[in-house]
Image (cartoon, rainbow, N blue to C red; front, top):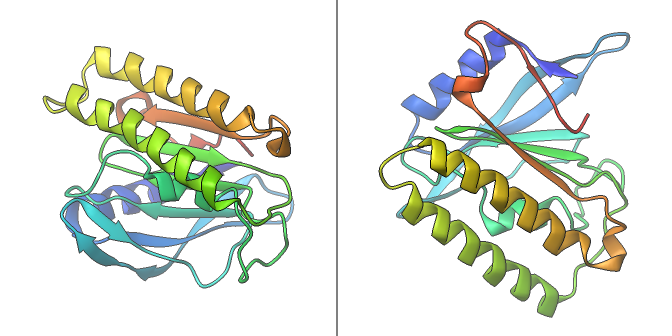
Length: 195
């Protein structure tokens, strides 16, 4: 499954030119691996460095942006949003993958299993743990996305995957990845890691 180069250009424009998040779906086509970007709506600002955009329903692949003035990485809410059950689910195991487009690149968060109500204590623990990890990333990357920061990002991805997959209910099915924009060749499509 891939996102076309043209849709990636649209996303980059949204990141650079909008001050709020945009969100929508990546729609599948019969007999094709191509996903079509569908922009459902624009979100709202919640405060400095924070925004929100909520789709009206959940399909297999959802996406949202973090504009140039928001965080360059997923929030704890972005992570547990893919794990929990939602009343506006099209099917109980949707979404499979959430794609977060930021100024640095593309984050994929995947959990293709049935969703369920999450324990509030566990959510609080997850929020604190991921917030602490991402806070460290924020301080390391104040000067931009250096080679050292990219190594640190991969370490963060591995740590968060291990933390979540340690919970037996998740059956080792949670996945997360990051691809920097400079790793995606000019005028190239992007192939999802978790499709």
